[in-house]
Image (cartoon, rainbow, N blue to C red; front, top):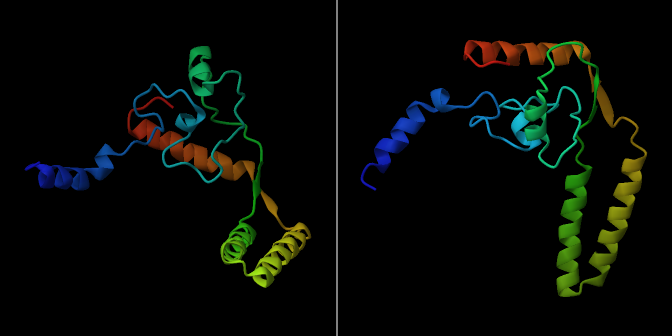
Length: 153
């Protein structure tokens, strides 16, 4: 316990040296979250992985599947929206109303949730595509980082 400040200082001073950049620091990851770079790109996977086993990443390693480095396709992504957060806040009011038997607030909250859901359903600007060139740029940066660390991509 006496060396706790020393350990904290060592960890803080060497944080970047201790950081993992591969996504699988112990090389024994079994599930898909270990297949993503660290830190993860905003789109997670450059190509949707084919899952053929419960431990998908372990299965990919056994079959010799390599990380894709070229010929990417555009990635379909959802846009950020505050609808879920807004409905969540209204649900808090609904819960409060239910606990304290404030029926007018409960009815207003349910109607608000329905109205917000209907309004959101008319929003056609919900998605976008990440271009293949952008995916290539991000993946090339990750490959260069791995090579500079001496790790096989």
